[in-house]
Amino acid sequence: MALALVIIAGTVYYLLAFTPKNSVELYEKIHFADDYETMEKLMLEGYEDHVTEEDFAFLQENSPNTIKQLSVFEYNNTSYVVMTTPGTQKLEVLEVEELPEEVRNYFLGLPNQGD
Image (cartoon, rainbow, N blue to C red):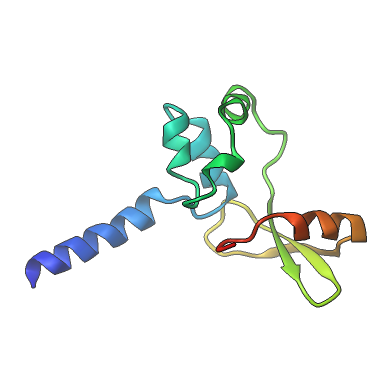
């Protein structure tokens, strides 16, 4: 019983301490990663092919002009992009915009988790 609690507590601690929770933390994990394999561990299983080693090199060698945190909300015939505060404990909405049809179609063409 005690061993099970230690394992569960260790897993929760790992997820809270070492998993990026926002765009700023994700940028830091990528920028300071030792190698491409370290970055691959940040990716959802099955999505590793969506980022190349060249992408990783570019992200490491360049600094972003800005870091934004965006979510796309899809409804029946409309999509919205919601910009939220990156790097803060409390997620706050900065802006909401309806996506133009061509941008909406682009996002609809991206694979979803579980596809």
